[in-house]
Length: 356
Picture (cartoon, rainbow, N blue to C red):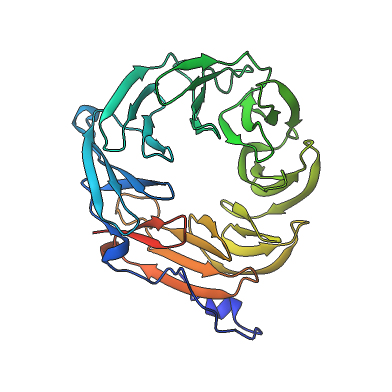
């Protein structure tokens, strides 16, 4: 990875800014001890949940774990789980654990199982779960490429209800800041984005152009604008929709992938390079090469990072990295990680997390 100061600091008067959250800090207070080899992180305001697993070619021999920690890395508990999945934590410490096969369970704050169910999800479903604003877990029973969406909604007590069928396709569903939901999906490889009201009725559908595929919602602004990416032949694009589903802006990029987030008055994007975009998706600043980036916005800082890929069997082998910028794309901190650093991600408040 190239030194980003070469790209972003030439021609700039760099102010010395206080760094309250930084990629550089590696100490026991942000390191976590867990049993598996690979991990995913979920957070609430009070706790960190780490799902980890020890992979195996024999699924029956794969070992799955969930650990719960405070923000300083102190472990409350860790339990072995009966199946793989994702953690969906509630504010009071209870949480759901679920996977795409329809296995779902709920646990109390101490990690003790409250109940477990097997949901009747169509076998070809690629629906993903959403924890909605009422702290209920939602999943589409049909999913793309089915042209009907029907949500099963389940609360932490295990009570379920089902929405009326909606004439829209969906794979991913997102909470919409002004109420209701936004979905993305496809039928016969015709991609669309839909706005669903809080009462599960359809408000509008945006249909992608014929040559636009692989739509993925990147972010939704507080005022309801929708930022999404997709492929167009060999190129990538970003588009913005307003709250009525009309296209505001569009821009094409030549890159292998693109991620983007709203960042104060701008948009920060990471394709093969890092870009600061204005509201018209025009490039204000650009530079620096990155591989398989993720973006997390934390107040006045934006973090672009990757945990790296170190396996000799991987198609691409590269070091992990974490780069922090302010809203003018001035470099605040930067760190490259070796495999021995055991970097696992960036917290919701902008702290680099590590495995002990």
